[in-house]
Image (tube, rainbow, N blue to C red):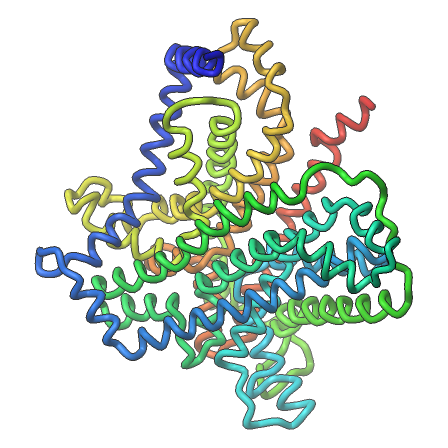
Length: 570
């Protein structure tokens, strides 16, 4: 009874606040128009042939040998990458949480966890080709191997595993820290070996989390476009097949059907990961540890694990360093010395690099604050408000996590090239910078929303209620009370959105027009042509921009963030 009365009172307060009602209506319209609508159009296009409801598009694509092979290839790559990434991520997390290691190793781990976030998605593919390709430094010039090919299944697997295992590492590190050490110590006191404790106590507690990490990596792997495009060679995946179907064969109906197949796979994995494994992980590991964990100092355990993780970290760092070094070689594959800066000069004088960086920077700079603000508003509504459409906003805002960029790109082509429902409404945004900004916002929205929800759940409701009691409206409370309390999360979301936008390629490569030059598209174009030094020059400048953005964010939070004020008051 009390719950129903409380809900009725919340609804009454909500309806009496026109700003809040307007915000909710605008949000629902935005999410419906730019997330649900393109996906719905894809589904409609895939089942319509000759103006009639038909499955002929699906029948046609499933009779294509290359498409059936692409499905098998995609699932195979996703499964192997998921297993390898989860295993390496678990090992890294275990070493950090359970093993006493030096500051140097800890620093390596931090660098490795940051690199994939601030780098373009295909940097490791470039490095792999330059180090281990037919004209690679290691394979051809150091080992004298000429008939080796880095392209294909194992090339994709290695690159994706090195790119995605830091994600598993960050996820599993938090899970391991939440395990109460007393559970493991009790098993040790009963005579169990450290391996027995791990297999019988630690691992069972982590199984939902391991499954969660595996599925997240699996989704990322099968949705990846850039790496298979560069290093896949003739080994096609669904993402590259969809791209080639719409750009090479001009088969939009077939591409729509293929996109629906890929979307169905990722959606199924996302639902299992989000609504089953993630919830089960939260329920399994609860509360704070009752005592500090006794770190492993046994050399027989510490030394092998630390050496292995350090070698993997160094290998990944070297792979990333290969890009700026490769940009200084005079002629890739033939002449490596003396080092030269001519490619950086050509980036700006011959290949319109200034326009590419300006367009990418401006569009990302426009998208980032809008994304960060939308994320905080959505987070605020989900955590602090009760209304009928809250579940819809939460689910749809997170939906973009499960939508591969290629699928979203095809959806925007089919949905807006002729206007909404082919009426001409909003047709004007197609081919403009506005649609690129919208794609950037949609792709980054889930990350910012998750961060905002975590931050808002730590704020006591009474703080905002006191502001309401003093006569402030919802806008005033949000801007003067809530937002200042979560400004660290807001700034983090802003920079993350900027980095994700400026390094994006899978969705925008289908939507960008000659009017705009984007850095990632230029890098992909030059890499496909074999102009690796030029591609490295573009990528190096892009990495510097993203690192600069992250550095400024950390600097601002350190000196002006919420956490600093809290420390000063303690």
